[in-house]
Length: 74
Image 1: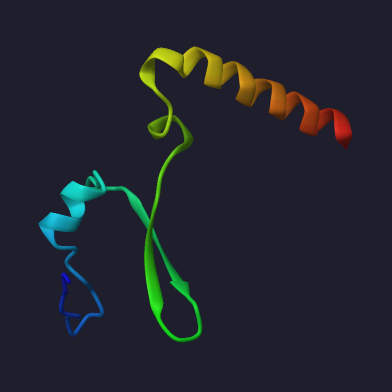
Image 2: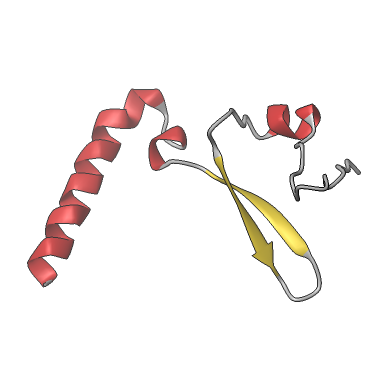
């Protein structure tokens, strides 16, 4: 288990081990999910961070189609 200490300003330094494992960089967003019994820290990834670079153009086309469909539904 990896732990961190809450500073007096309410800040947490994310341990390097976690940063590396989840490929987190400065400026990345992180969500804190309250499950009622614990707080779960979840990295928020951008869509294109999850796409194989060889398939990026396909992903862009799919996103554009979804946007068009959404606009046409209004």
